[in-house]
Length: 579
DNA sequence: CAAATCTGTCATACA
DNA sequence: GATGTATGACAGATT
Image (cartoon, rainbow, N blue to C red; front, top):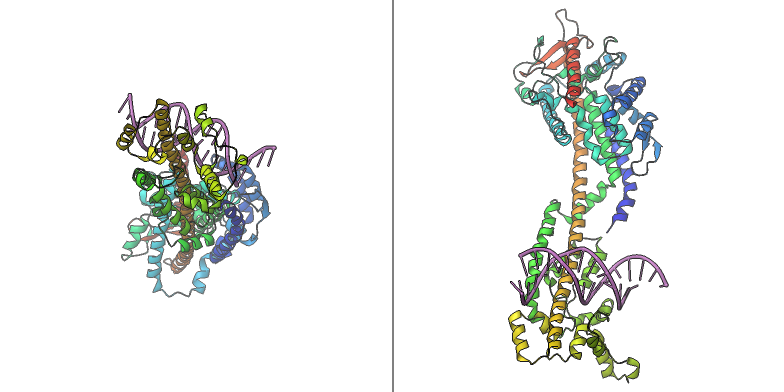
């Protein structure tokens, strides 16, 4: 099989993955979205190195150092290399929601308004889009939650689904480590902190802003705290959140999650040697999207059926095998082998070695054998722990002593084609063929024996021949089944890898669209917020107010301090739950 | 010539 | 219990 080729293809995949990665990041929000300070990033890295202890066992410590140096580590070779896209990497790292600095906030908030190209009439539609995106996000988070067995608090299912932010910095750092180190099994650990729930922002609703026709928001958002959703940095702030008003990136957490997830995805792809292009080609070749269903016909369970057919064929082979085949075995399993050979020929390109094995194992007809050079050895002579008398008498005269006419050559050839048991039978003057001895049903076999007056030695030999012959066929069938199992397992692996590649591609696509929608949400948020005016007609300060989505479907403008309190509560919860 | 593979056989378990 | 089958283990033959 193509294990080696898969391995070598993995390096080529890295390039593809890099391209994909670059595309995705380029597709993402601009720098202003992630414009956090490098200093903060480094703090988060350090913090992660310390706080992430409970996750440290899942990724090697060397990855942390590599991250700190903005190095990427090849998941397979462990080789470190400078990040190829410094801007991208930094944007990712800067996207870590944290105690962001205020100067960037105003711009990030107001710029969409100033440049606003979308008419107000698009707002509703955009909200609808937002809702669908959030639903998708919730699905992903839920999936991750189930995979990491990290359950949300029972009383707060909705907010759990959509809570995103509190520990995303740690998250992302971990993700970067993972992206550097690789680790399929750790792929989903990315999401664990995001499953942490946000409490329902119930009490403090100040300014109902969005009116009645947003019920669909309610169904999808639940009582998501928009402030928490959009201002994770505030929520996350541990040291600097008292450092004055600021307008965090509303979508930092979301975007970070998507991007970092993608990084880990790419890393996973690198590590696994998964090649999306090859996989898609495979898919086209096989023209089967149902990977495993294909296997169902070859799975070990199917083997039992083939065994059934083989047993039936072997029993029925008494007629067919009663031809002049001196090699009494290799009768059973024939039909199955043929069908399987066909399948191999049409389906599995890389299975030639095994296919040839099958060809060798599925022989039945000695006439065919004689034409096939690679089967010449079938008639080889073994030395057995048989009764010496039988062996001695069965020995052929030395060929050198014989004149070799054509007939004698033929006879010699036939002798060589004969099995040892046939030689023994001939030496013991058994009056019927080994084929009959072996393949006749018991009744006919006994009937045959009763027709002749046979010595005890003859009867014993006949019984041995029958036993050995049957066991020989059984061994051949057994080996063939074993090979079948191996082939099916390899096919299973191939199909699973194909499925995995497809799912990964779908995931990348999903994340890409998700990121785009998040950008939309961000601009919408900024647009809505920027249009709000207080009683004096002045805009609200984003450092003092935030929009929050209430449980009843309305969007509220609440003071920042309240969102901070909520954020702290949310931050504490998961820690408590971990114990 | 050594290693890998193929093949037949035996022992054993099971139906 | 006899018979047949499945399979691991072994050894000789072959590549």
